[in-house]
Amino acid sequence: MSNVEGEPAGPRRTPANDGRGPRVEVLTPRDVPLGGPRAMTVRRTLPQRGRTLIGAWCFADHYGPDDVADTGGMVVAPHPHTGLQTVSWLFSGEIEHRDSLGSHAYVRPGELNLMTGGHGISHSEVSTARTTVLHGVQLWVALPEEHRHTERDFQHHAPGSVRIGGAQVSVFLGALGGVVSPVRTFTPLLGAEIALAPGATATLPVDPAFEHGLLVDRGNVRVAGTLLRPAELGYVATGPYSLTLANESDDTARAVLLGGTPFEEEIVMWWNFIGRSHEDIVRAREDWDKATERYGTVDGYDGDRLPAPALPHAVIKPRGNPPRH
Image (cartoon, rainbow, N blue to C red; front, side, top):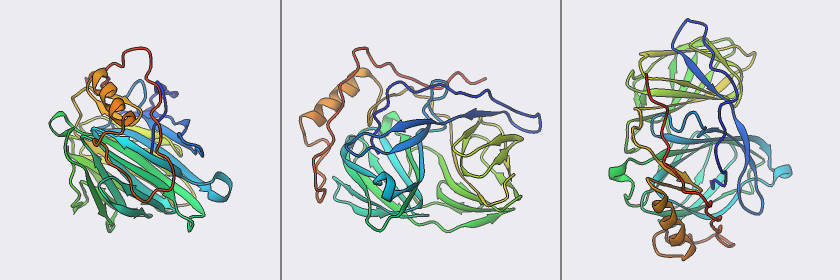
């Protein structure tokens, strides 16, 4: 996806906790239109003014379920990325992916597509004619300094699932419940889809060195005593060896669990680029504007590529998370 948002908003809800577990910070979503001639609207919970990253996860968009006949679906023309990995995960629908590495793949429910845009890559994303309902998440992972200029890469993985208590869990990145994803990442990460039966509870064994975020797709899910509603993201700092989830809905609840070791570097994130300084962003934009070989060419897309928006008049400053206590 292409990010055209300016300054991220701050949390719109006070953190809550009932004293039965780790403190949970609730991040509420904001509606953001994506760029392009047929923009679709997504619900964004990361980044926010009060929280830039969860582990190396730096961007979380949640969209749908959208009736493609009404919305037109997803049509994102070729656009660039630097310094990050994109993680595409669908609940329903199908998206055709093309990139300048030469990859031509489809994003389907329950299957991970992970694209690495280190020094530079470009790609397009278009929902297919077979798609009637489009529903999923688009996530970004910041690359650490030593790897942020790595070569382009694309990985696909269709994970199985494991039963943990009352939850069915699909681990697409990292490890949980004895399941280990084979997909390579550049920092320790966790990514998993969790389905909770009506009224069910599950206690997940997690790495205490990780901070975690639970993004609720449907249902009302209580995490460590704090209730999360659809599209809300609950953040838990490092420390717990387990997280207890409870579905307080009459239907199956679904959520995506994200985790990782705290990302200690500050980043500059503007449009589709991640750097460490304003100058990094200026250079990345110029290279896209001049159509240098840095981003390559996306073959097979019928249309023009996305132009870069104008840079802000102020210097873009690096951002990190609030100090940990």
